[in-house]
Image (tube, rainbow, N blue to C red; front, top):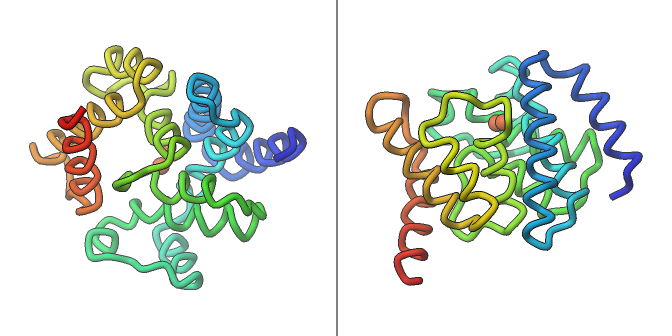
Length: 194
Ligand code: FE
Ligand code: FE
């Protein structure tokens, strides 16, 4: 990963995304780089994944679906009812094919940033968490607590975010992707053993 690549990616994102989403994207990239420094992860990799994590977010639903179909990505029933969820899978395909990202850890961080997954790598956790805590986010519950926790313990921050997301979805905020619940169960179990 060279620094020149980051500049190119940043420029493309500025063109591709709307202003609010671009600001969010920069926030995720910087926050991810800072979290990477705390956790012995390459900050350039983290910044790259942060810049690209929502690269398909501004596609139309039809385009998200067609990119996934073309690349043989499975579309589950929750995703077909809520196509916005597919921006992670479509983003993975675009990062790989259009931006020539070969690093599987970066690709996985993009792919899993909406639901998480059991057994996430450190980089995947960093992107998931940075997406939730970046400076332009204002609405999440317990945000200042989660922000502080993120720089102390990634797993605890992850579990807190998953807990808050599930309680929001369960109280009528939206449909729960089974993978979000699986991820919660995995980390709740893991941390209970510590
Ligand atoms: Fe996203
Ligand atoms: Fe995002």
